[in-house]
Image (cartoon, rainbow, N blue to C red; front, side):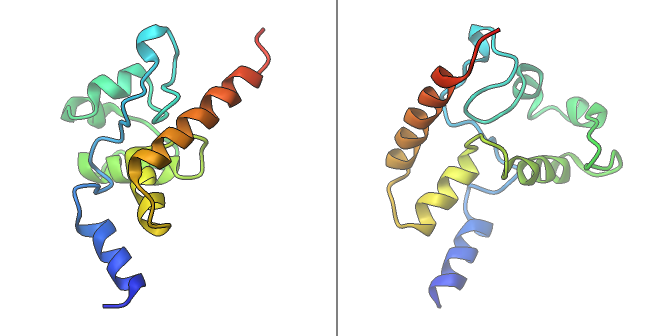
Length: 123
């Protein structure tokens, strides 16, 4: 199996599937933030992640309402890929692609995120 096939196979068959929880354990929603600086989810999305009722009401311009809960979760994850958040799936993908330890990638992201937030102007 080539490296590309092996990498792709691991992404699609591992527990890091796109519909799994994107949490990386650095949530700050409990401290009043509207969106988690780790995974990019709102408090409502965090608490409703595994509830069918949340996903049946979930509205997004890019995610059709008729899709299943699992499909909506996957599409939400894909939407987040280009945003400045580090979902668990994105972290795992980067670590595998560059043959790095996930903990190392997570710590580097957390350091970057803290410096990013410290540089943002507060109103």
